[in-house]
Length: 421
Ligand code: CTP
Image 1 (cartoon, helix red, strand yellow):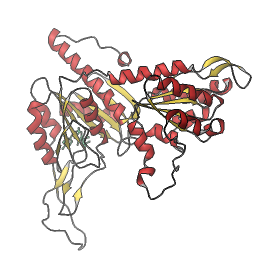
Image 2 (cartoon, rainbow, N blue to C red):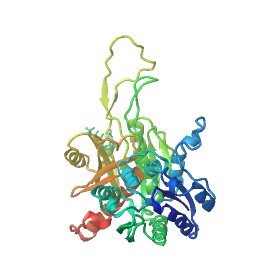
Image 3 (cartoon, protein in one colour):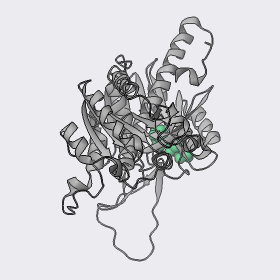
Image 4 (cartoon, rainbow, N blue to C red):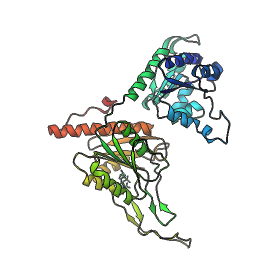
C-alpha cells in the first residue's frame, strides 16, 4: 500500500525521515512530498535516498509544459495513494489546508485525494494555542482529517509546552490503523443490489442541440464506487458524463429522461436499493426537429413535462426496496426537501444546497442533509467519495430501523447521529 508523507517547513522536518523509516518497516510503499519551506530544513535527496522515489516538491517540478502527465501529477498521486500523512504540519500549512488554498504540491494533493488524511502538527506553543490555529484544527477535524496532537515538552524555540511533534511511532501506528480500517471496511452491503442513476440527462432540440444541466455525475459515480467496494452489486444508469465507470459496476448509458426511466424500470425488480442521484430534465421539447434549426429570428420552444421517475419508482418498487432521491435546492432547502420527500414518497432525500459556493455541481466536494420522515442529518462538507460512504451509512441505518419496525411493529429508539460516528 502506498502512503505519502507530506513534510512542511518546521524544525521537526528532520523527524519525517524517521517516520518514513517506521512506515517502511510496516511494508508500506512510502513517497514524500515537501513544501518549499521544508526544503530549507531537509534536502529532498534525503527522502529520495530513503524511499527510492523522486520527491515531489513543486507543481511545476518538471517544467515540461508539453507533457500533460506532468501537469496532472498531483491528481495521479492523489488518486493512487492509500493515505496521506503530514508530519510535521506547520501553522501555515494547517491554515492553508483549512481554507482550501492549493498553492503548492502538498496542499493541492490534500484537496485532490480521496484517501484518509492524518496531520501531526508541530510548532511553537503560542502558535499552537493561538485561536487561529485552533480554529483551523477544528475545521480540519470536522472534515474528517485525523489530528495527531503535538506532545508537551521542551521545544526547539526554547519554550516549554505543547507543540512538539507527536512521537514518530505513534504517528506510524495511527497510519497503519487507518489503513487497516480502510482495508477491512465491512462488506456491509453484500446483501444489496443497488440501482444508481447519475449525470444530467439531455433532451434533444434538433440533431445538434439539447436541453441539459450542470450535473457532472460525480456524486452518483462516487456512490456507485462506494457501494461496490462495500460488497453490493451495482448497476449505474448514467446520463453522459466525463467520468470513467467505477470498476466492477454494470453500466447502462442513457441520454434522455425517457431512456433513463425505461432503464430504471427495467432493472427495478432486481434492486433492493435505488439511489436517484441523476439530474433529470423536468421538461423536454415537445417536438425534436429532424434537421438543424436555422437562425431566422426568434423562435419559441414548446416544452412538455417528462415523467417523474422517482415517484414512479416508489410506486412500482417491490416491498423492501428502499428508494433514495436527491434534491438540489437554491433557497429554503429544508422546506423544499421535506416537501419533495412527502410528495415523492421516497424513504430519504439527500438534500444539496446548491447556492453554496465551492461545493455541489462540478465540484469534487459536497455537503448535504440526509432527510427522512423523522430526521434531518447534517453531513458537513467533505469529498464526494467520503460523502458517498456517509450517505450509505445512513441508508443502512434506515434499513435497520425499517427492519426493526416491521419485526416489532413499534417505533424503535433512534440513536443520536453522532453515535454512529
Ligand atoms: N427526478 C426524477 N424524474 C424527473 C425529475 C427528477 O426521477 N423527471 C428525481 C431526481 O433524480 C432526484 C429527485 O427526483 O432524485 C428530485 O429532483 P428535482 O429536480 O430536485 O425535483 P423535481 O420534482 O423536479 O422538483 P423541482 O420542482 O424542484 O424541480
